[in-house]
Image 1: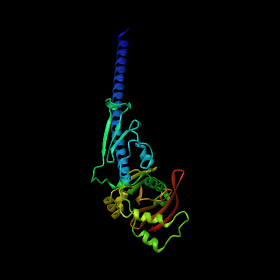
Image 2 (image 1 turned 90 degrees about the horizontal axis):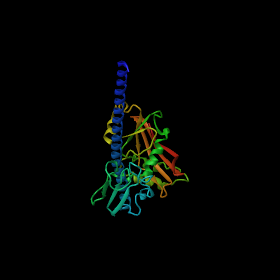
Image 3 (image 1 turned 120 degrees about the vertical axis):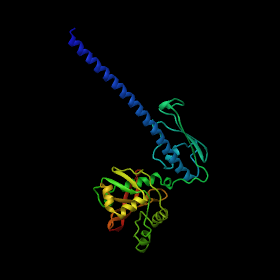
Image 4 (image 1 turned 45 degrees about the vertical axis):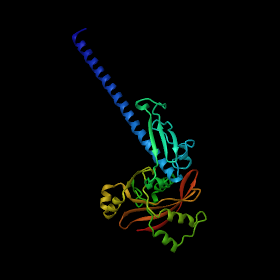
Length: 301
């Protein structure tokens, strides 16, 4: 073998070794990233279940029994699906009394014990006396379904070509709306009666915080009450900060009939001092989905 051939083979060998080393390093980095992703995901999912259990406790005065388990969250329409951990395994849930429980994820292998991704993760949940949760936990999955349905209706927006929704994080219903409605009563549809409007008015006697649970094919951004007021005082700032938005959207709490087959919500959209509109929107539930069947423009400028 001549010297030049030996040099070429040596170079090839070095290149192969470098490629093997780089590949091995990439594999190690990937495994670590996956592990970290699942660790963070596990904590997030545990926190989400904790919030759902708090919402259940608020409504029913107790956490679900051990026998009912987390399926009670679905039965009582707190969540749409049975909560699972980052590896799609079911959580182990045990209630100790009406104010405390234990929630456990068994990790990637779904078996007790282990280390790394297989390590068990335990959350001890309590609802101590004197604890008052954030009011946002009172807004259930049905209301977020209605919000998502209404947001999908571009006809209520002042700019129908927008690419994102900026929504006030606090629910609101202008208090003059039903006073005006009493002065000029609507000829009620046979599908609806004044009881739904009465429930809507009473339910919106105070404001509640929203969470980012609205589903949309566009990005949804919640803004604080202080930012809302600041931007409404200077709409040029709004355009600079949210150039792809269609103004500020305001939503009310949703009123339902007892069977939750009918719903009523207020939708407001403001894009300038004299540029906006507000609607009362009626929806009906069919085939497990809400659909808009009627709307009334309350104000427009």
